[in-house]
Image (tube, rainbow, N blue to C red; front, top):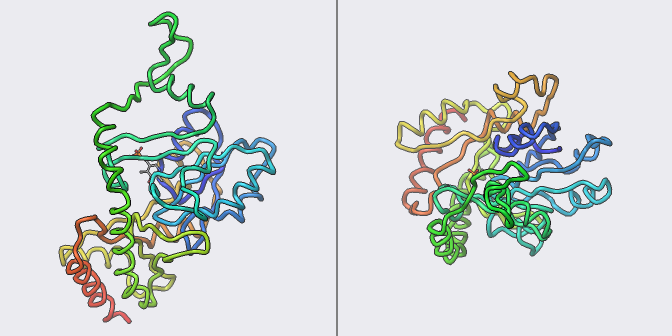
Length: 299
Ligand SMILES: *Cc1c(COP(=O)(O)O)cnc(C)c1O
């Protein structure tokens, strides 16, 4: 199974647990998404699927990815956890995979506390998922089981919250895009950072989070920057840590000789800024001013 190294560990856990072999691909230094141009080189006769997580607010370039999947008869599992409401060329993210997944964890665009959703237009897969989430009960004789399932049942309470949240999704996205634009207007001028692209030909950034990546040879290190922001009361978060450098996966013997420089650079040099929906313009200006204040003495 092919997936990017620069993503959350959730993407690789089911691969490992089912005994499949994860093969990692590097990321694009500008969009931070998996580098679709590098997929074809790592496909072998054993490759079965591509896991495609959209990262931070811009989508993966899906057309070339789908073309490769078709050419080599690979399944696509699209992870749209971070991009509910984002479109790739006028089509919703989460509608491209054989299976596409969403998360309703507290920090996602809409939340039900915990939980998520799998979507597919394949009836067999849908039925299988429904069965698996409900410990594979069978219709004919209750308590007779022909497969091993889980209790992954989504409650009615969560669904009710989710439906109410869904009504607000468009408003949330407008606000997120606005937050992103306010940061970019000032921060994209600062030469030591890479800031998120506002748009690509195929999509407009939804800014699930607002990332900053220190360029190579930046005069200030990531930890120093984070620590100084913290002193001003500004909490920032690290980017994902690349999968091929994860301690547990190394310990299990995975990725001994894997080198993926873009994923490593992002993991070591990226942070995200406060972008909660309740943030105000005054607070964003405060963040921007403090960043400028911290870095100007290094420039
Ligand atoms: C949040 C997230 C997940 C995990 O979702 P959970 O609901 O917390 O399991 C998976 N993939 C991506 C890309 C995510 O951002």
